[in-house]
Image 1 (cartoon, helix red, strand yellow):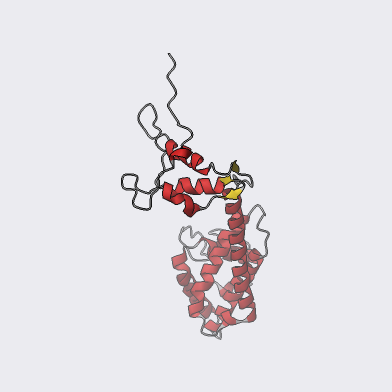
Image 2: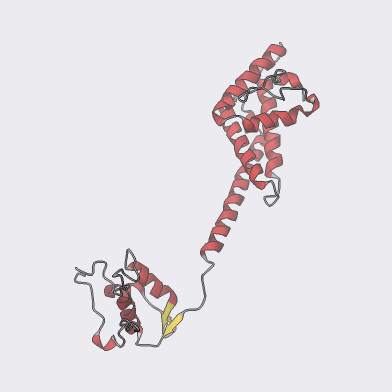
Length: 253
């Protein structure tokens, strides 16, 4: 890689916000590509176009026969090649997080370069393949994250359930309704939920009546959203099903 394509950093230039390539002291020009990407990954996203224009100006000054098309193709090929390298790395390797950051930066770099591409370089087969690889990589990352989320969300799931004998479903509903009315010794609700749907979903998910699923809509009428004004569709638990009463335990002396 020839140094004259890009502006090298001036000797003793210790500026923190430089867009030039290299170290402020002596450095090996044969490692120019490494220094190039070090700068690419370091500059702020809003200075990428400035970075491109600065080095384009340098290139044209040192190549009288050069054109922006030649420079653009060269820059694009470097970014495209490095992006392929990063996308082909194992997502489980120790530098995975750093690789992801660098991939995101190179993708941002290409996005900002495309409007400058007057020669449709980005539509070449290699560029299209690189873009597809990038999209596949992003989808793989999303799938990996979704699998982790599902595993976490289903960690407490169980195939078993609590079975209620036939005809005693309402007795269990009555117990749940009573539990909602329980108070702590300080007068606070022992079990609080914003909506009644939480109770109904819990019952339908973890309880069965005679090994059969409990219908959500069927039990809905027993759990009014507003207990002070339950509405016409509300139904009270039949007296014959109120088999148990939950009372506070007597305090021990």
